[in-house]
Length: 80
Image (tube, rainbow, N blue to C red):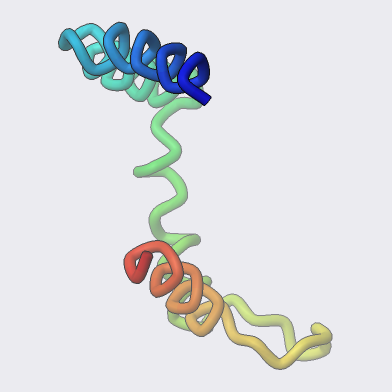
């Protein structure tokens, strides 16, 4: 168990010890934003319609709305 703690402490020293990890995350986000041609902006209208329920298909199976699924996922994420 002590060896495992030492391994995790070493990894934590590399990741949390400097700011390169933050720059890596920001750079990765910017890379995918440009590579995928700004999906956060292009699909915002579609996402808004899905969440508000205007995108539902009449004959689709299931009884959970898009908004209910979103709020359940967010409550599980924020609540833990």
